[in-house]
Image 1: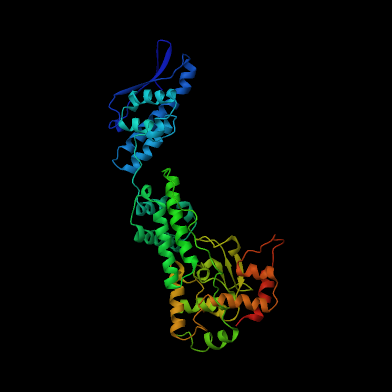
Image 2: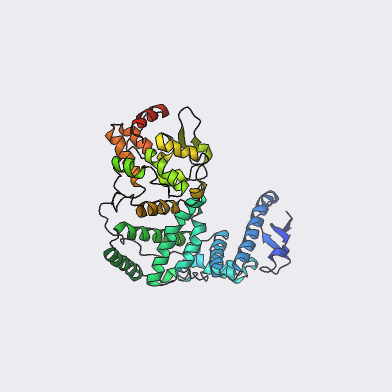
Length: 422
């Protein structure tokens, strides 16, 4: 670092890099190190130079003409200078000493750019981020939510947020966040109340929309430091008892679903996944996502080993072993590498299978679906007197109390499940 002494004080003197010419026309900068000690000056020089470079970088960011970038740059520049960004009304109420210090700093050479005054005196205007723009920003701000997820899981995570925002915009319009009022959110709630009554939907449908909309708006408000007071509280609907898909009866599974030729018209991978569900109770998405290394057919006890490979499991309890018996083992032997058709698009699996079952008259009632196989498997374990700990482990459910030991080993689980397999 090139430092020189002027009178009793050491200064840092360096050429302004060409990259920063658009925001600083000087050929060189001279920065007071505010010390008469050369040793102290040499310690301080690199730190002050780094701060100067950060100032230039921030000024460049704010020179893009983009309102969001300029607002963010103004906040960052205030922080670089050791101050907190405040809007102009709050700056006007500062103690005189701090106000004068801010004004004096904006008069310095390094803060001659208009952004300098905006950052310290609150001149940077809050960007007009609309609801649709908030959703665009949300994806980057909430990227921590997608860590470890597969492409299919990311799509399924994004969809309800997109739907909620689109529904909200259809009701109140694509307003700037700063213009949203309690009336807008109550109008949206009223819209949902009418749908619940008209279409016979559950409160859960509306509450999910409200939750996902709130997640987007709150995250953008917080991470973009907009400081808005969004009236998102106390909007949810009271939920009744959640409707549960009924299980298929054993007779229906044996005499209808597994009748010779009953599933011949179903797409082969969808048919195999249904058959795997019959004796494992695995979720359709869990079977669809299986990787070759999770399918252990040559083991003395053929089984599946569910692990977070290329995806995030639903819960920590979803990581488990599952022995294969009967029609489920035969189905997996036909697809030892897994189900490539649905691995990255499991959302289409249930629709494909349920449509076939409905059209073929293979649903025991209108309330039954593919997922009813999972409930049927759970009921068969209960009827067989299998211990609760093992039942919950097999289903991938939380135990609800402290876990001791390893639970059931593969051989034990296989022995217990074989008698109830088709």
